[in-house]
Length: 253
Image 1 (tube, rainbow, N blue to C red):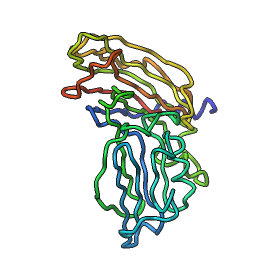
Image 2: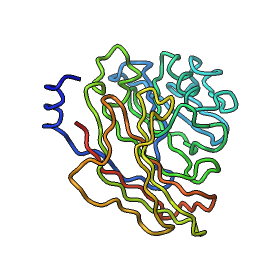
Image 3: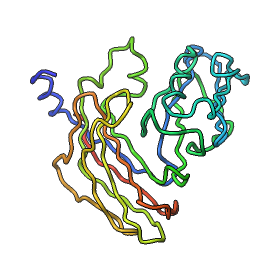
């Protein structure tokens, strides 16, 4: 990244962020690329929690993926192995969003998704079950680029020339047990193989909103091309979905 590009990026920086509630954390984004976007062909993705992800094209299981279209979580036990199996199909693309390659999917970590057909190249989100044992958190990702850029290596990626910064966090969990809550930011490389580093942790109080405060400054910057993953979680097992939320405000430059 040269100085000229960095100065230009700073000048045209835009606000990014969002608000996530319980069961609203996007773990994976997928899309079907079996046919051109303009065609009448359609796809579907069905998640049976703790069992499998099944992918369909035009109402029939896609035999290019997994075992006759079925990706059993007993076989593909992590987000990384699941994404790899989808991407080698040639008919689908997938990438990890708010998570790591090592995150488990062999239990009930992914929310069930029933039939809901969609068009070619339409982005579909698969969500985390925030109250599943081993998860107990709400997560959000600040991304420097656009969806599927890392997967489509033949396309010149924009994420390499941009960076994201974290400005403000607000979050609340009711554990019904007086447990401490935390908001932690991690810097991730594009492959999301692991956390490059922990960029900051903010401790809060059970059932009371934690707010890092309004500011025009950036608390944490990621390196160019890297993302920032924010987790809101409790230290124990008293997680209650009702009322839980995480609000993230940041900047992309």
